[in-house]
Image (cartoon, rainbow over all chains, first blue to last red; front, side, top):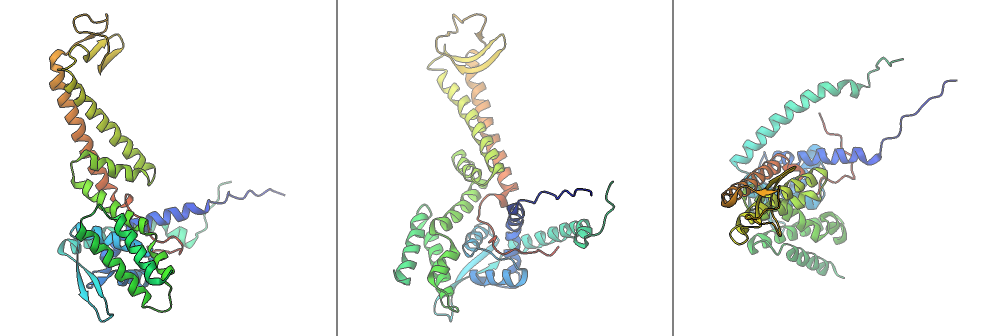
Length: 132
Length: 207
């Protein structure tokens, strides 16, 4: 009876690290894209990201990102008195922010289309001829 | 401890951790976080502990603000001190950051070393120079050796030309290191600053 060798199990945190890096790399584009349709405040942006893209951020992460985007001139902010009984700080894209979002979306689309072709057999789990 | 005092303590700690920012910047941030907490608490049953835990500790939150702004300022600044601080912060995030910090440290140490040699030459003319000999080619400061009576076969070759040569090489080292680091920080900006998306919930991104 032939012995079967199991592949060593992959370290569990390797995939997590890769995924965290990938998501971190997409954050700026995701936040800019969430503001494409109009102004939102921080908590709304978190909800939009979760609802529309399943991208769940630690709540404390979004505000430093927005602050950085604001100082880069990609978004602008304004305090607005809300019916909730307290003011909210709304963010909207500037012209530079819209341009950056457009560029990023274009790059992302090209990149994902190319990679999609490459990984299609992996997703389908196509059988491959095993070497003897 | 009541909810209000927990929130007050959190905001006070955040304010303290952001003390290097301007007052208007700091108060704007604190106010936004305060409103976030109020908004979350006005939602369906959630405790103040959960809301504050979602934000992370005040120190961690402040660190994210500082890190983002530090790197951003460093990208535009030509101050070696600021760039070195940003590189040091980057160094804590992984191997790439550590390598960048090593480049920064080497480049700036070299630049400062050459400038120091140029400054020392007028005060210690006999001990400062470019020393050449068998298997030797060193810019440095030597105790004991003199230009008039060098220890053969090693001897000093530049004389007073050492000053302009060291000034040029030192300035070039500082300028090139600064430009290189600014480029690296722009190129790998997404790797530098922040705590990432919450890793707890696996997400399949659509490709």
